[in-house]
Image (cartoon, rainbow, N blue to C red; front, side, top):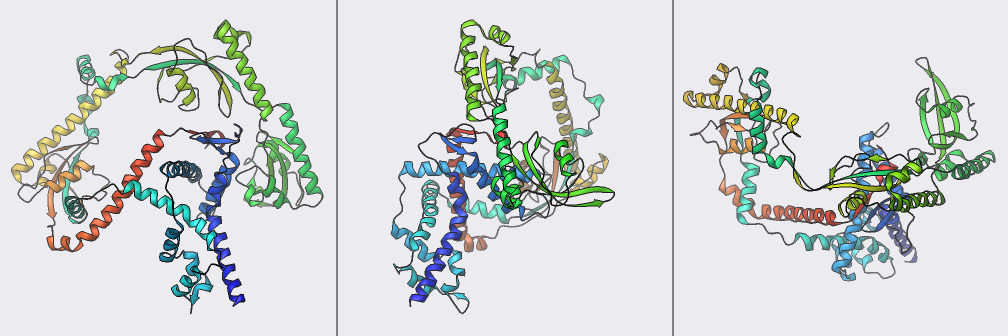
Length: 598
C-alpha cells in the first residue's frame, strides 16, 4: 500500500512540475513588488506595473523556442517579431485580467475546483500510468485518488485555480449576450444557402488618361463637397534637445573587467557552452550555448570576423570589442564551400549598457538645461551649451511625431496640456532624455484649398476614373437586360464574363466585396441580372446562374445546436469587445522597439 501511495504521489508531483513549467514564464513575468523598478531594463509599463527586461526575455525566449521547432533553419524575422509582440500582448492581457478579477472580487471555492477536476481530468492525469488500467484511463481510480487527502492535489489545484477564475470572469462578461430565433435562422441561411453567378468587372484602370483632365473648377467643387476630409484637430509644434544615454568609460571598463573574469573561468577549464548559456547576453544564441552556426567572411562585423577567422580549432579568443559589446569567441571547425572559407563558432557577448549612475548623470544635465532654459530662454541656453535643436512638424494628438519615437505619449501630453512657450521637465526614454519647448498651438480648423491643391488633382482624377468605370457598367447592364444575356453584351464591350463556384454569404471570395456578395444573393430567376455595383476597386454586373432553396425541415433539426454554437461565439465576441475597450482605457507604455528593433 505504501509503495503504491509513493508511486501515485510521485506521479502527481511530476504532473504538477509539468503544469508549472507551462505557466512559469508568466510567473517570472509577474514578479512585481512594492519596490520601484529601475527605469533602465524595463520593456514596458502596464497600469503602473513595470515589466522587467529579464522577465520578459525569459517569456519571449520560451515562446520563441516553441516556434523554432517548426523551422529547420532560422526562424523568419517576421515570425520573430510576431512572437515578440504576442509575448507582450500576453503580459498586457494577464495583468489587465488580474486587475479586473481583483476589482470584481471574483473568488473560487475549493469545492468548485474539486468538481472541475472531477469532471475534467487534466490530460497529464489521463496519460499517467498510475491512473490507467490495461493502458486506458481508469476514471474510478482517478476519483478514488482525488478523494484521498494523503495525495498532494493542492498543488495541482493551484495551477487549475487561475484558469477557472479566468473562466468565471469570461462568463460574467460574455453572459450578458443573447441570441434570438431570427438570428439563429439567419446564421443557418448564411452558412447553407449557396449561389453561383457570372460576373463582369469594369476597372477604373481601363479609363484612358485623355478622359481624365482636371479643371480648377472641378478641384474646387471636390474640395467644397468633401470638407470633412480636410478638417484638422488641434495641433502643436515642438522644438527639443536630446541628451543621448550612452555608456560612460566607467561602464565600458566594468564590462571589460567582467569579460576578462569569464575568460579566466574558461582558461581554468569551464565548459564554453555552459558559460555562454549562463552569462551571454546575445538573446539569439545564449540558449544554444553561444552557437552561431556556420558563417563566411562578410557575415559578421569586421572586428569579430577578423579574430574569429584567425583562431585555431578549439581556441578561445581574448576579449574582442565590437559595436555590440565585448565578445569571447571559440572556433569549432572550418571548411571550404564553393571556394569560400567558412567557420563554425560560438561566442559569449556582454553588452555595454549605461549604468544607473550614468543615466542619473545624464538626467542631471537635462534637468540643468530645462531649469536654465526657463530662466534664460530655450534657444539661448542650447546655443551656450552647444546643443543641437530639432523641431517637429505640426501634429495632432495621437499622430506619429517626426524625430521622436513613434507617437511619444509624454511629448503629446506635454504639448496638448500646456500653453505655447512652456518648457518641459526632462522626458525619459530608454535611449535619451528629451527637453521640449512648445513653439505653438494651432486651433482646430480646415486645411485651405491652397494647402491641399496638389492632393486634389489626384483625388479628382480618381473620382472621375471610378465614375466613368461605373458608367460603362451601367451601359453593360442596360443592354444585358434587353438581351437577357450578360455574356453576349460583354463581348460587345470587349469584356468577359467569369464564373464563380457555389458560395455562401459567409464565403471568402477574393475578388468580391461584401456589397457584391450581398447583391449576388439578392438575385432571383425573375431578376437574374444585377444593377451595377460600385466598389472602391471598380464596378461589377452580376448574372444569376443558380441559387439553392432553404430547407425548413433541416433547419428545424439543427436549430437548438446552432443556438448553443452561436451563443458561445457571441460570448467570445462580447468578451473580446469588452477587452478591447478595457485595453484602450489602460495606461500602457511599450519600449519593445528599444530592445528588439526589427
